[in-house]
Image 1 (cartoon, one colour):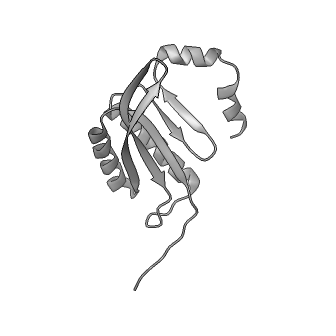
Image 2 (tube, rainbow, N blue to C red):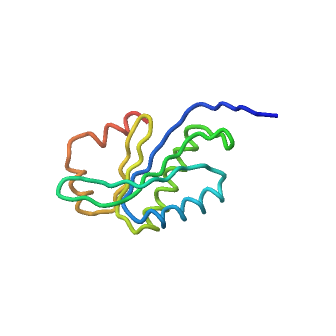
Length: 127
């Protein structure tokens, strides 16, 4: 007999430079451990004065493993940090339905961001 299940839609993307094969293995291990479904696809990032190959990891509220929004947010952060370490990257972004969050280990960028006006601080007001 066929089964059809609906869950509230949640879509979150992790954007990172690095080796997609390494990233796929990290995602596979994480998904097997926690019961999660992600998609991973090749991306090429072009930014001011540079570009580099990378990948995008998409998380969704998969009806086979239904979760709340906050749980998927947590998975995105945990997986992003594992990917950053495993792919030897210094930064990545998570795009969610309300915010895009940049995780960064570059000292020079962190100093610049702390001097910029309130955009980063605005997020904390809404949480």
